[in-house]
Image 1 (cartoon, rainbow, N blue to C red):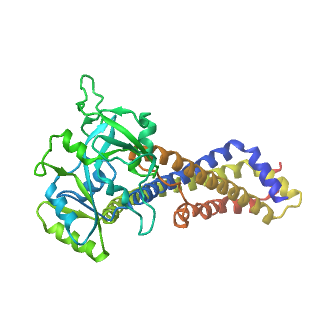
Image 2: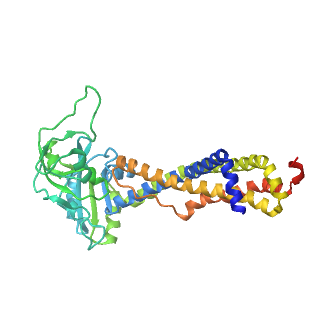
Image 3: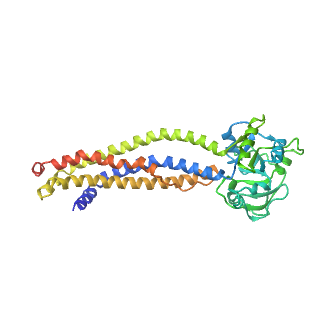
Length: 399
């Protein structure tokens, strides 16, 4: 009977119920969506870079080195002399030294110069190669190109097609500004399997292609933007990194350490956002209280009728609390679903801009606790109106 009365009251006051539901659900979604999205980006970035042990670049910002050389999202710091690369490659502690070269684009897609050792990288020993040719063949001479999965879809190029790259890291769209297109013609020889990482939106070619295009015809004139380094043993990795950082031209960067630093900055921003979320949840709690208080004034006559028909004070008290509990629970549920939907939608958009896939949003217990305390807060807000309704004399409102 109590549930039937509660549902009838909520249906009678549908507009006030809807407003309260919206307030609770929007406050819940606001508290969840940014932390959800930031964790998606964090997990996606770590997944995309987990194949790389150590990154060696010219001296500069470690975060810029990672963003430019691993994610193709920033301007490279500069080039290392080719002699630095050959020194690393010849080091007996080296398991693999993969050169990277940047500087050109094709319709905004980065042209990545490297060599076949790029396709020997694995997540762990014994695992299959992380980067694979899905269709076609591996390049074996300059000006052959492999297209990442997203790059192939975006450009529409197929095996056997030809194209010319342009100077710079991005496509220019300013009126009157023409692309500085190179004379050399690339031929597509293969399509890469999708990885969900930045390589999906890249054009991969032998690094000799970039050296020839930019007139670097002798070893003394050549440069490499970065080196993806793997040591034969774990201890060697740290010793090589230490010695590299002691040299005047190069720096060794562990991508995991950079992610940890960036995560610290993100957490600082999330702390400020958590304050805003708390304010939104408090406002939602106030909305619940106002709704219950206003409905208490409206239900005075119906409560008097219930009491006159024999309903006890406990029944009246329970009806008011149950109304509030149902509204808050429904609002929390809608807010959680809304936050997951927004996280999925924003993750797809943001992932396309960042160049790597973001995992689906997941709600962890610690994150849910940020909003679940709105339930006891709502019940607490309903206590004074519920007590007032239970103590009201029925004869006063039946006249």
